[in-house]
Length: 227
Ligand SMILES: C[S@@+](CC[C@H](N)C(=O)[O-])C[C@H]1O[C@@H](n2cnc3c(N)ncnc32)[C@H](O)[C@@H]1O
Image (cartoon, rainbow, N blue to C red; front, side, top):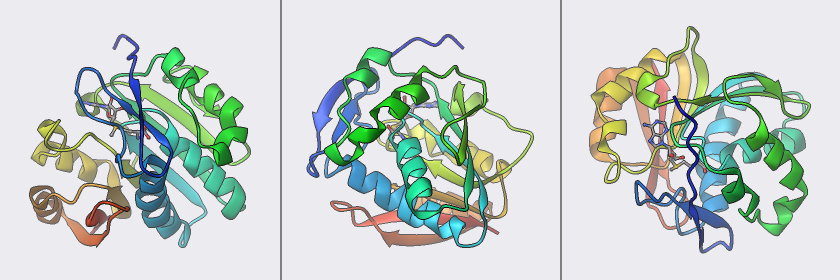
């Protein structure tokens, strides 16, 4: 797949952090109620910490790598609060962001010390695993979710696709079958999305589904554990 780069515009969200607007799909990368707040709540608090309670080596797959904010929050959380954990983090992205967009993406002041690491994450080549900090190995895949495959399974999936209203094809039965194929019993899938049809598909495909309180501005989010 050709690594065309997307120039996305900045949008300030209500917690003061910024998100981006995808020019082709016409959607924002995070909740406009608060980008960092949403990522911390959905992926870190309800995903990473949940799995970290039972294991110290965690294979994470992120569908929709985007700005790399979830990867950055995973790294800083692991380094500050999970000193004995190691993450093997893979991210899938069909529309890589232009480096100039990333360079202009303002991290919140409390994350500004991570600016160099953030650029390293984005400058690293696609398709090659690399050590990113003491506790994390990262591999970014430039491909469509629909074309992604792995010969092993993941402990935790951050399912961070654009909303079903923007990209219904990423929330259909084929996508849920793929989530099943990329996980093992006990694996966890977290997403900000609480759509009923998606949750029914997860249940029908062999996941136990929990509706948890959503990030500020959203009533619910979804956590699914593979049976
Ligand atoms: C909600 S945004 C993800 C935000 C990201 N996790 C972040 O923290 O910035 C959805 C992402 O999925 C990507 N995407 C859209 N369609 C895709 C597809 N079919 N396969 C892989 N990635 C896709 C978009 O380019 C975008 O980066």
